[in-house]
Length: 282
Image (cartoon, rainbow, N blue to C red; front, side, top):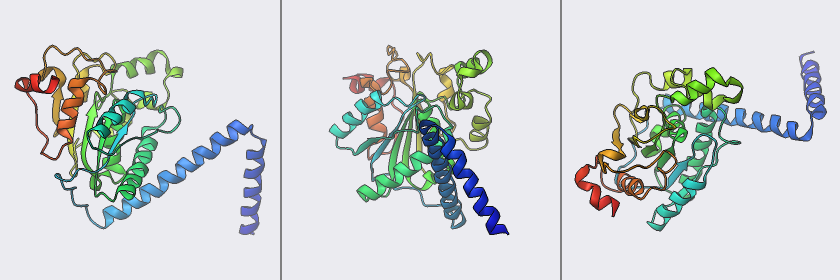
């Protein structure tokens, strides 16, 4: 009887899918695949944690670099940054988010988890460095906390990331809720996702965290939303007071790239000061 009901249910599901347009059917199947991937990753993480907390990555052995785009999923500026890092001898790959990067940030963290596993398998390295631009920095932290990144990441660098939300997202929620998809709502300062992510330890054991941002940011408002307790926090203007780099310019600004390269090197991460401005901006 139970098997008969199961066969009937499967048949009904098949008829429902067949009735959808090809584009909508592809979308539904893609969402099912994402849900299955997330479930598998959660099971893996639970098993890892049941076996005990993983050892932190060796800080003097840099592995491949993964660059995570921000809201909207555009990779143009990160493609340029990845090319610069490769010129400097690093293995650097831009992670492509699901769809247009405006969906659930937790699903994007699962994508990052898969990308990290692939990078380690491809290179034979023991750890990865992750650079999260804008909302990509929130994705990186979700990966560290919930998807096994605490045992795989050596350093996590965030660039202009709304770690405590941005008032622009809150405004969109209030004024244009129909134009504010899931990730937009999650980036509002009072979202359930950010409240949970920032409860307790903002920088859990495992990787070293570095947060870089600009005081001239008009997308992440206030810019200090990027500050992370327990991280090395670097407002660009504390290094070079005259910098006017914008939010969109962070991944390609020469000064920011120099600071970033310093922070993901073999030496321990440091807090650059105004005394380093000339050297880092030359």
